[in-house]
Every structure is written in C-alpha cells, then in structure tokens.
Image 1 (cartoon, helix red, strand yellow):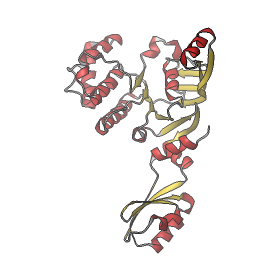
Image 2: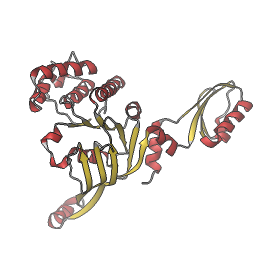
Image 3: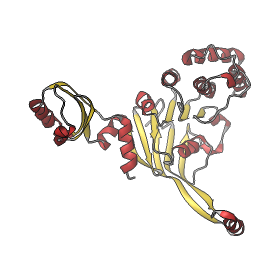
Image 4: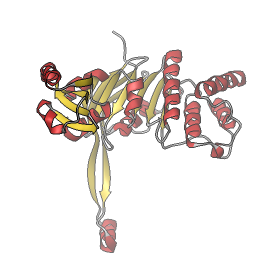
Length: 328
C-alpha cells in the first residue's frame, strides 16, 4: 500500500484568547483578572494526499484552512491529532523537511523590497546551497514560464502587483520543493496574471512531481488545477472527494438557458423551476435533475424555442450554498 505523502489524523487546533470589556474599567479589570475564551479553529480533521496530487482546500473565512496549512507546514503545533508530511513531524522544523516544502501566502512577501528580483533569488540560492550555474538556469526557466524575463533586474518596489506576486511564487519554488502549500496565491491578481500562475503551477507539478494543497476564493483556480477538493466548514471536513462529485452532492439542480422566439414573463416558466429573465427573450431556469427531461419536453412543446443549453450551475454558487447551509 502506498504511503501517503501528507497524512492528517484527527487533527485539531484550539487557541486560547483573552477577552476584555471596552473602556477604562474593562482595561483595569482585564489587568487584574483576565478571562479567556477557547476557540476551536480546526476540529478532528483527517485526510491523506498522495504524491503528485493537486487538491483544492475550500472553506469560508474562519473555516480553518490557513490554520491547517500552518500545522502541515510546521508553523503551528496541533493541539491534538497526528500529522506527517514527507515522513516528518512538521512542527519539529527539521532542516531536511524544510528543504522539501514551501508555504506561499498571497498577502505575505519574502522578496527584498529595494533589491532586484535576481538578487533575492541569489540569496535563496545561497540559503538552499544551490550552485551558481544551477541557480542561473533555474531563474531563466522559471522566468520564461511566468513571463518575467524583462523584470529580473528591476527592484521589487518598481513591479506591478501581478509581477511581484509571480516573482514571489518564483522565489518560493526556487529550491524545487516536493510539497507546495498555497494560500490564496492569486489574491488580487488580474485575469491574465491568474492564468499565468495556474499554467506555471500545472507545469511545475508535471515537471517535478510535486504535491499541491491549494486554497483560493477564486473558483476558477480550483476548477483549472484540482480534480479533488476538501471542503472545511466550521473547523471540520464537510466534503472530501472529486470536484465533480461536489456538484452531484450539493446541487440537485441543472441550469437551463433558453432563448425563446417570443418575449414572455419569467413567471410563465416558473412551473418548471426557479426562473429568471436574463435579457430580452433569454431565460435561466434551475430545474431539479430528476424532472429535467420532462421539463425540457414540456418547454419545447409549449414555447417556440430558438436556443437551449443545459449545464451545471456555476461552482461558486454551489460553494456559496454549501457554506450557507452545510453542517459538518
């Protein structure tokens, strides 16, 4: 049986937070006698990742995604449970373990603000004992994949947000880690920059056999990169399985887009499902899967249909529904 590259068993993390009432009286009371609140950020989470997998890690703000990534990367020690990454206990921060992982957070930076990108890469090469020739070739390879050839000699402070974020990703992977923990790597990027980052990550995984655990609020990132998703809700796992299975489990509807020859009120289609008018003579109906064929037959018989398409509802709508209604 293949040993998982990442193993989390009954993983939990509880933080103790001091509580203080507002005002001077609250401050004095807090100084003399403090009250504490225990917050369960992650509760009894278990999963495994095999070598080469790209897994989407989804959940609303406060679901425990970043805390879990920090436990897997060794920044936070679990309160309970067992975690192994590449056979190591992450919180022990073994040098051999750290050489094989990276944690990229979309709102953090490691590049030195006033130095050219190339100088920061040279510093990373020295830290990870990468010889000069290898570092030069790797910088050329990564810059070509990310479209950064023209900016390597520019100070980081001169770069646009998209250029800087791609350079941050480049620096984070310069030591060729086997495991990538990515927390919102496309945060704040425009569409073109997002596409470049996704293509780079797919190429990196294919070329170096890396395992990637990815969190993102951009569902396009998840759809483009991950075949499997883990959904966290209120600190626990709500779903772990194929991305397509998420739709089957949480969305019992299909989306029917219609163009009719005549302009009718949306209420005329309400009997087939949740209907709304998107523009003149065009409509969107959410039809229950089980009654889809019958509904389509009745619509075709009753209306003069010019165009018809059936598709899954957008993933972001399904995820929003899961977060608002789901229970662990």
